[in-house]
Image (tube, rainbow, N blue to C red; front, side):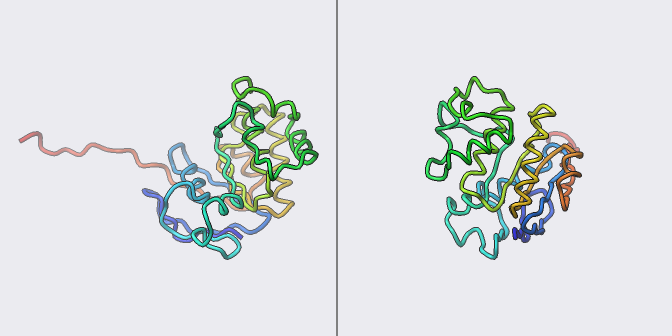
Length: 207
């Protein structure tokens, strides 16, 4: 179980919620409401006040790399630190046959791993990042707009794989603007309030 207790991400109200094994929580809200910041906080990528537990262990009780091995964040546009996707996959956690199946499940082939990053489409990179996050069998997947850059056929494949991860007992926290996707895969929904627009207050003019 993933449990978030009194997490504080200004200007949002304090957040407390939990997600059971095999369940999906979708985080919804307008652009700028804090969806990405919330996912990054859960992944322990940004400093944040509050407690985050996974199966009873609080994130500060283990090292950052150990936490992120169990709690994987997939950004809307993931980073690539090699000329090809293969160079960014964890070599010690990759089973070649299993990886080939995972790629096929989202409409890709092993050849995509060796193409230059600059020659891949946005949708191909998004699907490769999703498959990369599955390596090492993390307990939690934090997915930021996983289907936003995909055509309908590819989006359907990724959606099916999200369901498969839930069937396997993983926890999914999904940030999305896609109401249909949210309705189809989520067990619970968290709606973040709209960000407040800055307003100018009269000061009476310069002295």
